[in-house]
Image (cartoon, helix red, strand yellow):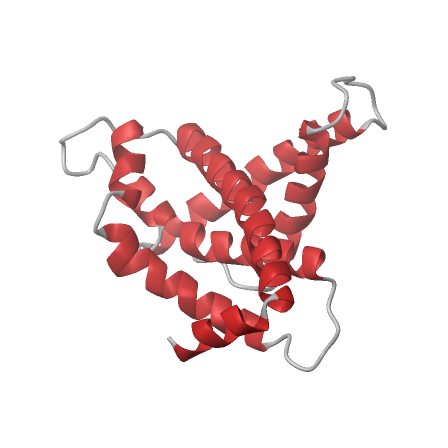
Length: 182
């Protein structure tokens, strides 16, 4: 599993493949905010999640991303709550959200496998890992666990970083102008 994951982010992959895609996505998404008042925290969380979903599994904005967003937000709240596994608690709801995420991802993997189409994303690389015989094939359960970990970690770290970048750039217009000239 470790080898499959490292192959996705080992240089030059991030520089030549991931970063240009993320940059284009972020620019398009931020451009959509022009001329309107936005809740920066909510919008950066949404932008981070959509970016992570696109890079990880080729998912764009729509019903699938909305379903994943709902369950992921519930899972995040569950992971930071008191560990009381009783119906109605955030912890319990987090477990239920994870079960729903697993179900959604199982369906997505089944659809990917049945279509036979090649995708240029991390899910495709995970599904193909082990096909060349150099390492052991990863099970669907392992792929789902990795996808949830990737989406969760990408969402949590990127949304906070993006929010702080927007905050600091709005407070320092000269820095923003320098970035625009690049």
